[in-house]
Length: 225
Length: 252
Image 1 (spheres, each protein chain N blue to C red):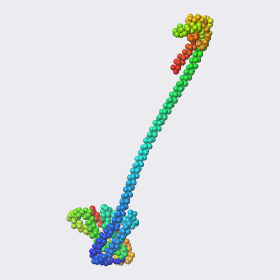
Image 2: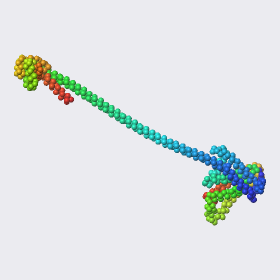
Image 3: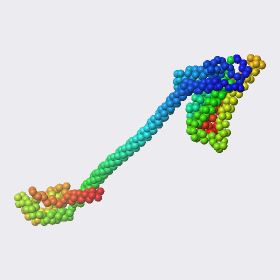
Image 4: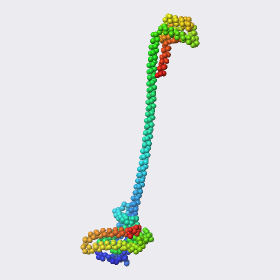
């Protein structure tokens, strides 16, 4: 396990031309490979009555779809690629920090920032697509045009808070683990690592639910405002 | 804190790429399987509904047929009942008719038997009465009655039709005196008186022959070869018996 005593710094593993490839990028690639491999293995011969892996995958996807539908009150499959991928990736990314020598990509600011940016633009995209430019733009003038700046700021700040919440929790957890390990020895951090599993799952859930709520607000109600 | 913009960009691209990959390898197949399963479920549901409809229709058809059968059975039962009732009535009527006929025949036979018995009894009574009267008359014969008998004979001679008188006159002319039969034997004086009176009435000259015929009971009979003049109680009794019998028979 590589001890990161400066968690805000990104470890560059190698360069692809001018592009530095950091550990969080490679970890993400690994996670992507694992997810694609599992998906392919589970669904390559998808049948109505599938095997255990297909069943597990289907149950997981359907559970996420049900959760999204419960929030959005619309057909979830239109939004599922983004939101389900967000949740699955976050679960894997958050829990990857439990593996020896692996840093959770979400413990560095770039990954939560990238996800928050994607959520921010997705909210605008889905809002524009569902309501049209005029109706969607009008929402920023409600309840009073004077509140336009505040509405714009709130759009940015909620995405910023999304990013910071995830980054802060994951980074602090890794930092605490590193400190305890450094101070107390090999087996003392185990309870904190178990707590880290819970934190990772909760953060994935919170990030996804908030993203869903934001999209839902843009698409229909405004309850996300 | 510094942000590595390259990493930010790479992570954004990585995530979007992951979205695309999972859309291709996970969500689409999962959705396809779910849709397939839903289609199968819907098809099964549709088939179940169709089967249920068929079953309901079959049940309704069966119930209708059962009701029809029941009605037909009731109708047949009713018809059979009516037929049996009519048959029973007919049999009863026939039996009554036969009974009436038998009763009428029996009544008629009884009446006939009764009439025959009554007639037999009556005949016996009449015969007995006639016999009794004949016996009484035969025992009561005397000279006075013989005179009455003679007088009745003379009356009859006087009342003869021309044809009867001519036939008797012819017999007298060819044969002489007639035969005189009486129920009781006449004395000589009576025979003389009778001969005298009859000669005067019939104009014959010879001596008549006198005979006794108990069957006459009373009275006399003048017998010629081709004619007879007769006054007898037996005839009177016979007539009286016939009259009596006829009158009783009519009354019966």
